[in-house]
Length: 180
Image (cartoon, rainbow, N blue to C red):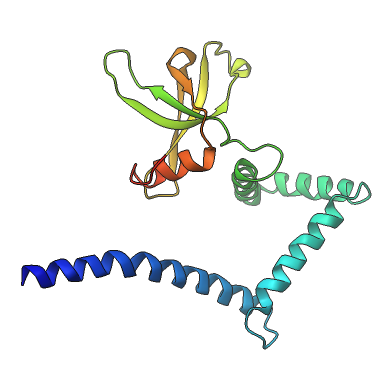
């Protein structure tokens, strides 16, 4: 019975991650196909890629930029919409674009009394606008979750890591299970 249980758990460890990954990918493709229901499976995702590329191309034109700026100003003035829009835009800008924020992985000594360290990402190297000179803002993602915490820590406690940001993020989010 022990051997059966061990084989079952080994099979689960192999099949579950593959199955869940396939299920998520199929669900996203299915969702995109329902957005553009053209009767051909997979055409929705192709249409979405083409549409996003076209919008990116058009938005880079100097003639369109004033309209984008005006639209964003309007969105920032509408009470509930401004909170949602600015949060989502900041989140996307943190990962993609010219102002990526999670590109400076660090190891932070959490207190002088212990040798405990946390891995995170410096998001602001200067806090002069809030009258804090000797500290930096470090974001610590949570493991197995899409959330995290922002700490203001002394610069002396921060050690910059010469590692790819994506590998550090994967390491933290996996709870230290994946390799650096």
